[in-house]
Length: 417
Image (tube, rainbow, N blue to C red):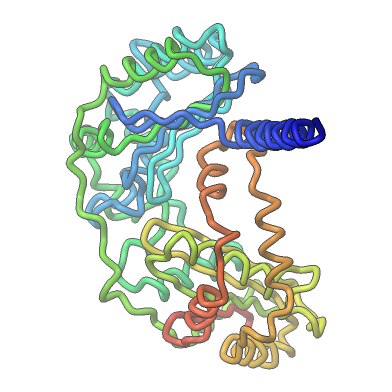
C-alpha cells in the first residue's frame, strides 16, 4: 500500500510540475507559426482587447537602398497610408480615427521596412480591408513633394546637436563608403532625383509575400488570420526582386581618431567610441549584451568604478550585417586627454578573469526575457530568441578579443578646440 501511495504521489508531483512548466511556456511562448502565403507568427493572448499587427518587409529599409535611390524607403514612410482610396489626406485620417486604428507607424530607416498598427477586435475585418487597400494607391507629384520636405534629416556642425554630429561621423568611419555609414534618412542628391516611377518600381520589387513577415499579437482566430493574409495577398506579388544585400567583406574601419571643432560647445568635450562586430551569431549577440552590461552599466560597471567625472552612456545598435557598441561621454575639456587615454587602455587590456559580474549580468538578461508589450511583439521575440543561458567563457572571450582589436573601433570627439 505504501509503495502504491509513493508511486501515486510521484506521478502527482510530475504532473503538477509539468502543468506549472506548461503554463509558464504558454504564458510566454504561445506562438503559432505559418509559412503560407507568407511567414506569420501569432502570439495568442485571449484576454487582450486589441490586436497588434506588425508587417516586416525584410531588407526593404533605407540601409539596403541603392546609392542612386538612397532614401526612397524614408519617403515611403511618409507616403503610405497618407491617402487611401479616393480620400484626401484629411479624410483618410478621419477614417482611421473613426475605425479605431491606433498606433499606426511606418519606419523605413533601418534594414527592414516596418508597418505597425493596432485594432479593436470587433472592427478587425473592415480595418484590415481599408488599411491594406492603401498599398494599391497611386501617388501624385504633390504627394511626393510633400514627402521630400521631411527627408533627408541633415546633420551639420552649425545646427545639429553634438551627439548627432558625433554619431553621424562615427558611422562614416565605421563603414567608409558603405550604405551602413550613410545618413539613415537618405542623401539629398538621391532623394531630389527620385520619381513616382521609382516609387512604383521600389514597391513592386521590395514589398512582396516572399520577404514579408507578419507578427500578430492578441486574441487569435483562424478567421481573422485568413482575413489578414487574404487581404494583403490582393496587393502584393508573390516574389520580391530586391537588390543584392551590401557586402561588408572589404569595408575596413577607419580607426584613426577624429576631432571635430564646434564653437557652440564651451568647456565640454564630447567623446564617442564605436566598436564594430560583423555577422554575429545569436550566441555572440547574447554574449555582447552581457559583456557590455558588465563593463558599462551605470550602477557597478567595471569601467565606471573610479568615478571619472563624466556623463557616460552605452548602446548596442544591431543591424542585419553588423552590430555596433557605442560608448558616449561628455567630459570637461581639461579632462579630455586623460579620459581618452583611460578609455583606450581599458579597451586594450580587457581580461576575462577580471570580469567578476558576468554571471550576475547573464542572470539579469535571463530574467528580462519576458514579453512586456504586445505592441512591440516583434522586438520581444527577437530578444527572447537570444540564448543567454548558453553563453560560455569561450564566447565571452571571442567578444572581448573583438573589442580589444583596434582595427574594429574608432573614436570621434567634439569640442571648441
